[in-house]
Length: 101
Image (tube, rainbow, N blue to C red; front, side, top):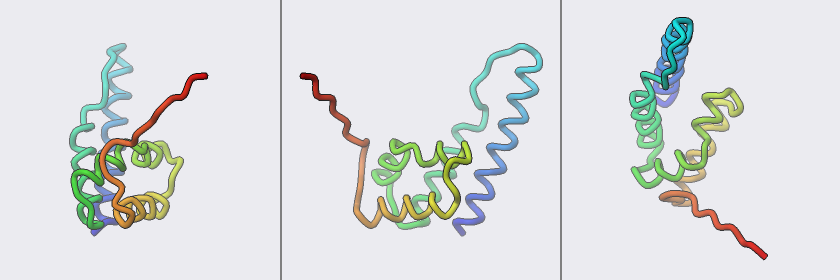
């Protein structure tokens, strides 16, 4: 099931890139058209692996789906990272703090 969802995600992103290329050829600026659909598939991938909305929020905030989209992370690394977040019950946005001295 996860492989089918990843295939769907890859297909959505490929179609989105083709649409954006055509729009940019017309000298029109635009964000992605299938961004919302891609995010829903990402959410389904997290659910299928046993996660919930809070896990998805953490995983989304980690940037691992963006790394996957940019081909900086393999499918197996993506799945492993998602499973690790779910197993460790990492939820919500990633907390960052800055210390100034």
